[in-house]
Length: 179
Image 1 (tube, rainbow, N blue to C red):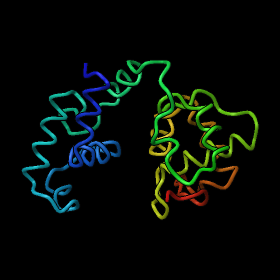
Image 2: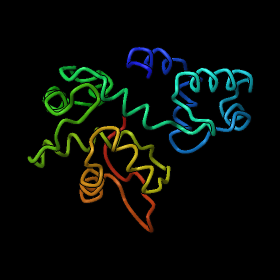
Image 3: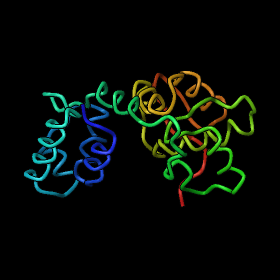
Image 4: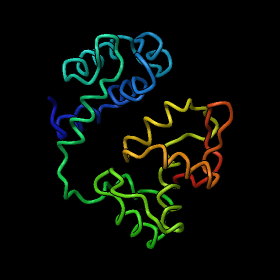
């Protein structure tokens, strides 16, 4: 199994990060991704090979979610909040709220207090691009990376107007954008 440090080293490469991001939605096709990114197909193939070697991609070039779960489990429990979580348009008080409810990049609990919960939900909404339509499965997978009760998070986000749902498709309809 790949350890968290090796995963970070692999994911810091922009091409491999793009491959992982695309693989989260479905299997990666090298030529298509190379065209979209404006890079050489060879570079995408090298990135795919490195990610397969590490076990992050399966034979069909889809993301190996089980390996990601193992990496998450291997993260230290006492990790401080990931700087990426609090990077953005947050006040000092909101950073304190986020720091209280996140360890690393994991949401440790869903705040019962509505005001604090809204700060956390707005942070999670930043994971969704405005103007993009997401299948429910994609929303669930994204939220599951933060907390196991993704259904509650999704429901809260819809109830608070951060996501809108119609016919099983979701889109971001509220919240802040990063500076």
